[in-house]
Amino acid sequence: MKTADASRPTRYCVVIASEERSDRVSTILRPFAPNARQAGVVKTPLLRQSSIRARHLASPANVVVSAQAADRSVWERPFWFTRPSNRFVADTGAPTALATAAALLSIASHAPSCLIAVMPSNFWVARESVLTEAIDKVCGVLRIMPDTIATLGIVDTHMEIDEDYLVVGPNNPQKGAVIQARVNRPDPRITRQLTNEGAMIASGILLGYAQAFAARFCKYWPHLAQVLSDSLQLRSNPEVENRLVTDTYRDIPRSVIHSIRLSPPTFPMRAFRVQGSGWCRWKPVGQGQPQPDNRRRANPDDLDRVSAD
Image 1 (cartoon, rainbow, N blue to C red):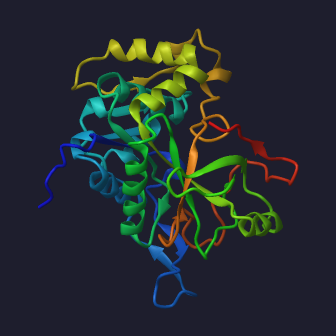
Image 2: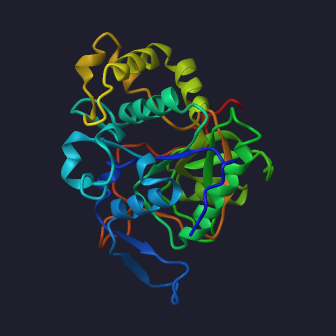
């Protein structure tokens, strides 16, 4: 039985539970399976895996879910154990990122010195222990860099083609790497060039202290952060879910609401490498290509440049 370390900060885990309809299983290439050339199917729904992972990273009482109301039938069962006050649900017209922002600001309002792991629910790993060890290591580093937001960059021999990549500077094991640019779904030839130059897959996993997350929201979206904080203060009943309705924010331009991106360049952070986890993003069963989306592939002159944090 594990004993709590009083010197360690409390840890929360925010699961973004409505991405990519991730109740589905995924078709993957399992690089750590006995026969690495065989395609495997993960039979455990990814949301259930995310639920289990979150409870390994934080106490069940500190697991928070960010989701869409329209997908309630998908995420509610895997996260049955979460208290209503730990559910941040975006109604139709409100992006999930708005619910995630509200969740982070809510945690920061009552536990500013806690560590938060923001976990998308649309990926699978062959070795959970490798991912957990990487998260624990980065959390240890953040204790001496409390103002930093960190993200995990995936570096494996089996690299994905249709992914977003982080172009980084020299890696510092103690401080991570400065993210210089983000490349959204580059063409295969560009992908090969990027990986040869040390680029990492953008996992979407974020780590940082609650007060650091709140500081960024207040810096980049000050009006929205204030409105969110004010509306959260009015919802103090632990038996009531936090519903994010666009009408509540009618005085904020929709362009601002939809501009929330918890990724560089909008959200400055440092990248830490993770190798050997067998990370793979969700793909539809029976198909070799990732789920289609409307993001345009990047060209060499079409990078999202990032300023150092």
